[in-house]
Image 1 (tube, rainbow, N blue to C red):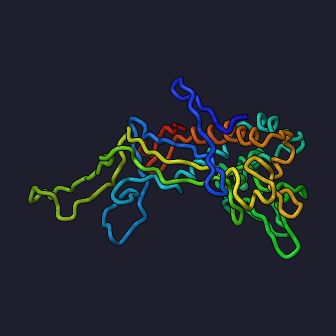
Image 2 (cartoon, helix red, strand yellow):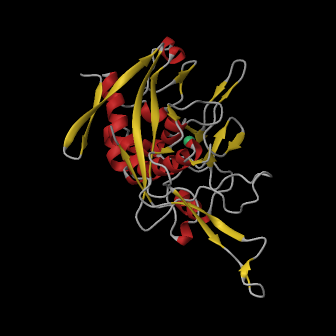
Length: 304
Ligand SMILES: [Zn+2]
């Protein structure tokens, strides 16, 4: 089994190789984000006393940037949807017994689920609140004290960490993904949508012109990467790599991977990348704000 992931891009097969950096082995997926035609991108900058401008977009050295955190949020959402939509297919791939299908349900990290999320919990698509010992928790958590390792339970069944938190990480437990910021490939990608208020009496722009906001133009392409940590020293000491169920003490914390009978570690890694990571990344269609005004439409591709 070769240490590469093949991708069909515009009719050509390209390969993404695993890289070893010291004691860490990673697979870096190069990602391109194109702002869709007819739309624009608006990822708001945090308000700062230095800019009086309203509706400024997030920038680094005056260049518009898609921060890793924005992309991360969008990917988390797509992973949730994928595990819900492909529940039957994944149940087969990961060999999950019929009465344990809910191991694949994603958690809702927020203590206050929205109405829509609550409906999906009732339909059995998302996890309901789990128990960690005697405590009720939202999202996934584990607790490690002197002698006791607690993992989440629902209806007295150990359910462990959900598949989405396996990839993305959760409170007190690292995931396997690392995100870069995304930078535009060309300059001049920002339009300043300035609505200047005309002072009717004088016929010139008023002293304090109102700025409605900046936008990134359609067609702008941003590039960056998502790295998947295949192994690092601590995991390696436990004989564990990306694709395996992790253990703490002798308790399995990634219960959804516990039944998978694939023994070849490289095949496990490839399956998770090809069946989960790549589809979830390429399913991202919206980023940032001003969605009600038609903003934020993007096309995302893994591109070598
Ligand atoms: Zn979770």
